[in-house]
View 1 (cartoon, one colour):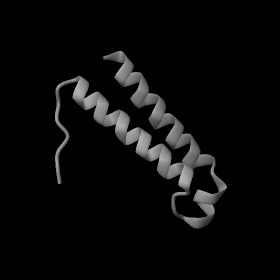
View 2 (cartoon, rainbow, N blue to C red):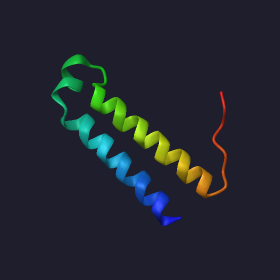
View 3 (cartoon, rainbow, N blue to C red):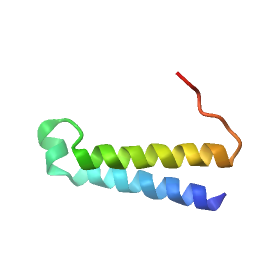
View 4 (cartoon, rainbow, N blue to C red):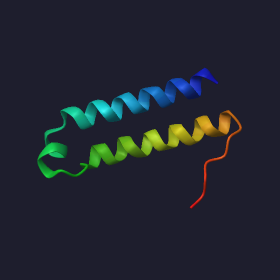
Length: 60
């Protein structure tokens, strides 16, 4: 289970670090393509962790 938590934490830190340092994200006030990709990876890691702990993510 720590692997899922490690992946989630790594994805979150990578995404947050990018948002803080990306000139394009700041200049456009919108996410650049890299930020969107990193957010997608973070969301996948979050879903994997929820599955690993037996929790279900809410559906819309």
